[in-house]
Amino acid sequence: MKYIFVTGGVVSSLGKGLAAASIGALLEHRGHKVMIQKFDPYLNVDPGTMSPYQHGEVYVLDDGAETDLDLGHYERFTSSNLSKLNSLSSGQVFETVIRNEREGKYLGKTVQYIPHVTDEIQKRLFDVTKANPDVEILITEIGGTVGDIEGTLFLEALRQFALEVGRENVCFIHVTLLPLIRAAGEIKTKPTQQSVAKLREIGIQPDIIICRTEHDLDEDNRRKIAMFCNVEKKNVVAFRDVENTIYQCPLDLRRDKIDRLVVDRLGMTDSPTPDLSDWEDFVDRIVNPVNSVDIAVVGKYIELQDAYKSIYESLTHAGAAHRTRVNVIRVDAEAVQEHGAAKVIGKVDGILIPGGFGDRGVEGKILTAQHARENNIPFFGICLGMQIATIEFARNVCGITGANSTEFDKDCSEPVICLQEEQKGIRDMGASMRLGLQTSILYPDTKASEIYQGAAEIKERHRHRYEFNSDYLDRIQEAGLVISSVSANEGLVEIIELPQHPYFVAAQFHPEFLSKPNYPHPLFYSFVGACLVSKGA
Ligand code: GLN
Image (cartoon, rainbow, N blue to C red; front, side, top):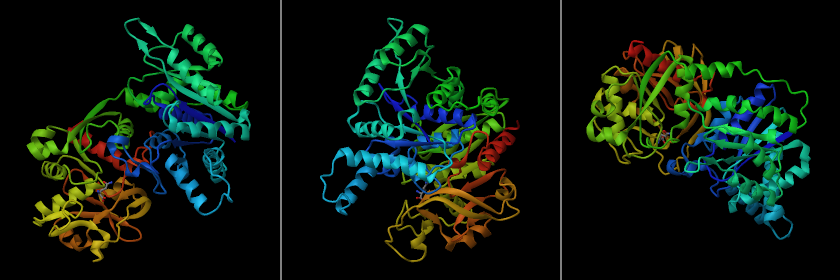
C-alpha cells in the first residue's frame, strides 16, 4: 500500500483539491487503483451544517455522508466511489477521542494530543486501507494551510504515520503559491521557501513541490526552489492557472510528469505510462464546441462560485457529450420575485432550478417554473426544484391556490409538499434528512424511462427532508402531471414530468452527484439535448 499526502502552503484556494484529483486521474490512467480522501482541520463534525457562504456546496456520498466539495472533484476525476471514511474532520477526531475517554477506553491514562489524537487520525488511514483492500494508492489531501494551528495535529500524525508504514511508501506533495510581483516583474519563491521550512520544522520533508503560478516556471526559479526546499529540481512542478476548464489540470500537471515522479518516489517501477486519450478527447470537446446553449440557473446562492458546483460540472459533462458549450446564466430568485421571470431571465434555451433550503426567493422560483412551463422552455428541477415545480403546477394548473410546502409555511392550508411524518399525521418526529443512495422504480412509457434507456430501477443520491404529499397525488396527476418514478421502498415521488411540454422534468434526488466527465448523467445529457432542440441547433 502506498500513500500520497497533499498539503498546501502560503494561501488557501490554491487548487489543492484539484491537484490531488488530477494526480489521482493520472495514476488511474496508468492502471493503478487509487482512492482519494480529505482531512479537514475544522471543528465541525461535517460540513452538513455549514452555510454555503462558508463552504460552498455540501457534497453527498452513496452512504449519505455530507462532505466537502473536494470529494466531488475526487469522484469526478477518478472512478473511486467514496464513503464516510474518506472525509475526516477535527470535529470527528475529537468527538471520538472524548467518547473513548468517557467510556474508559484509555484505561486511566492522561489523554493527550500526542498520542491519543494523532493515533485517532492515523487510525482513519488504516481503516480506509482495510475497508478498500483493492486500492493500491491512497491519496489524502489535508485541508487548510501549513502553519495553521488547527492543522498541526494532522501533520504530526502524518509524520508519525510515515515512520510507521515506511518512508519509502509515502510521498509528500506540497502545493504552494508563486506570486508575481508585477511592479518588479518578478516571480517570488520566498513564500514557498518559508512554507516548506514550516513543514520541515514539523519533520516533514516534501518529496514534490507543486507551484501554483499564473506564468511559466523558468529553470532559474526551479533551481532556486529545489535548493532552498531540499528537493530535486525535477520534483519542482508547475501548476499553471488553466484557461478553459479545470479538466485541463491533469494534462497540465502531466507536462512535468508528476505521475512519473510519484511512482518513482514510491518505488513502483513497473508502472506503465498513462494513456490519456479519453481525457484529452473530453477536454477537446469542452474547448472546441460546435454549438452553445444558454441555461439559466435560478437559485438563492447564485453569486457564490461554489454553491452549485456539482450542477455546473454536470452541465459541463453533458455539454461536452453534445460538443456544446453550456453558458450558465446565474439568476437570483429574489430578483425574479421582484421583477418577474420574463424580464429577469430573458431569452434562454433552458431553465434549471437547483436544490435549496429555506423560504428566501421561493416565490421567485415558483414564477420561474411557471415561466418555463407556459413558454415551453426546457426545464429541469432538482430536489427543491422539483418541489417548486409541484407547487407551481398545483397552484396554477390544478387550482389549488393555497398550495405550498410546510417548509416555507408551516400552517399552509394545502401542503402539497410536506414532511412524511406530517402525511401520516405524526408531528414532531425530528424529521431527519433522507440522505444518500436510494433505489427508485421507473415507470415505462415515460420521458424518464426513455432518458434512462428503459432501465427498470435507478439508484440516486438524496439530501432532503420534505416530500411530495401523497394526499394530492390523484388531483395533480389528473391535471396532467406525470409521476414517472417512485422510491422502491416507500413509494415516494422521485421524478415528475409534463408530457405535453418539450422538456419538463424534475427529480427529488441529486443527479449532479453521479455525473462523470465521460459519463454525463442521463438527466443532464437529455436536458442539454432538449435545450439544443429548443434553440433549433
Ligand atoms: N429544502 C428541501 C427539503 O428539505 C429541498 C432540499 C434540497 O433541495 N436539497 O426537502
